[in-house]
Image 1 (spheres, rainbow, N blue to C red):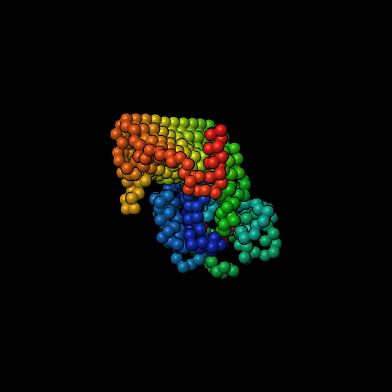
Image 2: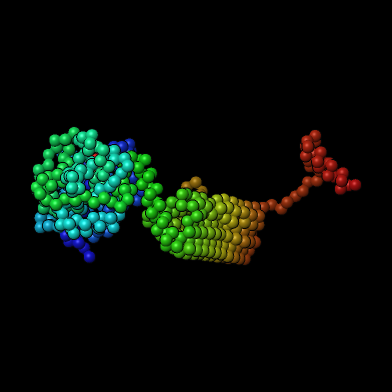
Length: 478
Ligand code: UD1
Ligand code: MG
């Protein structure tokens, strides 16, 4: 399936100054992946024989990310000569000398470009037997872009950069998207002739088109179906625009695959999330990372899941969870905080104002209210009363709490770890469980209650409480 006559060059050496960021532009995240990872994924889908990435600015960080997402890609360092033309020239040197096919050139900062658009561009280029084919776009506001200059018969003549354009050229609304297909031979030949005599003193890739035309070669500009596809990310306004657009595409894909999205405007789904049919997403839901949601589960409102797995028909309301596994038909929230290592079995419950980390809660077990469960293993069909706390940290070490199956813990219990509670055991309200509880035992740690009659009147004379107590006593006397 590999197209041995196709290579892709990704231009990723630019500075990205307008982002005003310590993070290189193409490493800024979009839908859970760095910008450049989207471009790499698109390139890979074309099944080229080779993908070459040209780097320079923040080289090591950029290379680490590229190698992470696409280890097979070839990295080429751009030298001191600036410009897109120079970037492509150094990339060509990495191609096998016997390569005679077509070279696709794309920018690392155009994350919405899809492989279908690129494949169509390659097909059009080959059908026309062109030396170069530019993907263009018609924009209402062409500011900043190179303009596509056509001759009177409509044929592509050349591309002129904004900085070098005349007033008449600036009025042109067809722009160069920065995406091209070139036949490698003519590209090599003309690039060697491109100089840096322009306003920016850069070696422009775009100059190749005019030179090819002058040499009598066939060159084409093909407008993209919708201009947002080729929108570049240069600043944070464009980053947010691209993120919104990509989210719309992702939501649409899942909606068509059978997912209900009640409020697309407030629902965000990362590119690597997987959803099943009949999943329902309520307003304010963010599904991030490699989150996976099984059939019929209902997520939200106001829920963020990062790298989580949610089982069939589970319900997760107003929850923040990272690296948690939620079993089938389990219930989580509202107002739950699930930290890494939380594992909730089928039919289980993590309820309101409950924090859980690094703990297993078995099938049909419930931690319904106001609790902290850390480093605990809880069996099946166990119920912890409101306010259960595992005291897992002794100031030096984190210690485990093990609670068996069919345990009924009273309200407001503290389990002072390390401690074990056996199957079928009970604990009283307010118990501070410092010692192991054998299976089937009832553990009570709170002193029996003593009532000292008349205490308030005797010790708090003159207070409202004393008056109320006296009145109550009069009523019961009468
Ligand atoms: C370029 C085009 C312009 C087009 C626009 C589309 C040229 C001369 N101009 O302009 O016609 O409308 O893209 O967005 O090509 N890069 C390198 N090495 C360099 C310079 C740039 O790898 O020395 C990379 C950048 O990282 C970026 C891409 O090339 O991914 C485009 O560079 P950029 O500086 O954004 O070019 P523009 O001036 O926007
Ligand atoms: Mg640009």
